[in-house]
Structure formats: C-alpha cells, structure tokens
Amino acid sequence: MRARWMFVLAALLLAAACDPTAVRPDVKHEGSYRSYQRLLDNWTRSDKLYRNFETHLIASATYFSEPMRRGYVAEYARAFDLPADETDFMLAEQLNQDRRDIEFIVVWYTPRMRDNDLDDPDSSWRLWFVDADGVKVGASQIKLLRVRHTREYFLFPEYNEWSRLYRVTFPAVGPGGRALRREEGKVKLRVAGVEGSFDLVWDMTATQ
Image 1 (cartoon, one colour):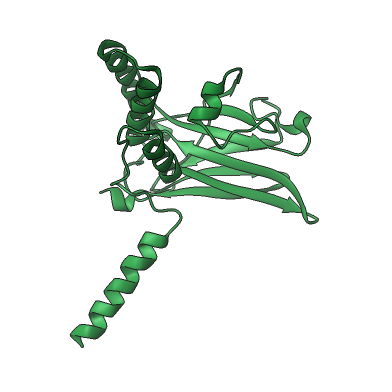
Image 2 (image 1 turned 90 degrees about the horizontal axis):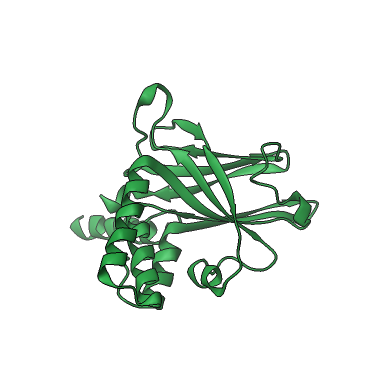
C-alpha cells in the first residue's frame, strides 16, 4: 500500500512539473543571458486563435511579477554594465511600479498589421486581468512600445518584425479598493474579442 501511494505522489509531482501554467520559484537570474531566457520562459505564456484554418492572432505575454522585474533589472544591468547606483535606482523604480500596478509585456501578431491596434480605444480586442479569486479588471493603460533598437529584440525575444510590442498595465486594486490577489493561486490575462477568446494562466501555487 505504501508503495502504491508513493507511486501516486510521484505521478502527481510529475504532472505538476509538466503543467505549462505553473510558475517555478527556483528560476532566477544567475548572471547570464541564458538564465534570463529561462526566467522569461517561466513568466511568459502564449496562445493562438484560428478561424477557417487560418491564424488570426498570436499573443505572447510576460507577466512582470516582482521576480521577473528583478531578473529584468539584473540582465539589463549585466548587458549594459551599469554601475551599482544606477542598478539600484532602476530596481527601486521597478519594485515601486510593482506595488502600484500589474503589468505585462505583450507581443501581439495579426496577419494584417492594420488590425494590430491593441492600444486603440476602439480596438476589436479587450484585455482583462483576473485575479486568484476571479475578480476581473480592465487595463488602465495599453502602450505601444516603439522598437528601434536591438535592445528590445534582446530583452523580449518573442518579438519579431511582424508583431508589435505593448506594455499593458492594470490597477493593483479591484472594485471597492480591495487589493487583487495575485501572489497565490491562478491569475489570468484574458484576451477577448469578436475573433474569439482565451486565457493565459500563471499558476502561482508553486511559488508559495
């Protein structure tokens, strides 16, 4: 009986390890671009929408959680050989932003570039953040990031010349001023529109 339960436990642990939504708390920046890539993979989710066997949307979102922000600053500082005071200032800014807002860096591809208008108030798409309790809030800001340098390709390798890069910001509080629960359970970035919808999911359970 003990052997059977050990087998079941091992199977459950294996299933959790293979869960594409699970966030791994042990993935951290370790002073190299390769470790930054692993960190990005840990905090990035992607999905597609098809219609009549044709691709209508490919979306990839990196959740700028506190661990992701720390890794981003560490890699930026490593790449540009920043002095300690500049690195500390950049990190403080990122951590302050994390306390105020919930942010995602989103790579957005549509076959027709004119339909790639996520920052347009009249866009055919809406983005929602859904916290671990199911509380849903809309984006407070969607900003198209102007990509003019190798830097963006380096820091956000999901981006390519056929897509657009956005910073999507949500409030950290929901209706009634209650802080959104985002550090445990499953949080979601919901993509919704006339073409269809899907959820990008980050299961934070493993980080506790």
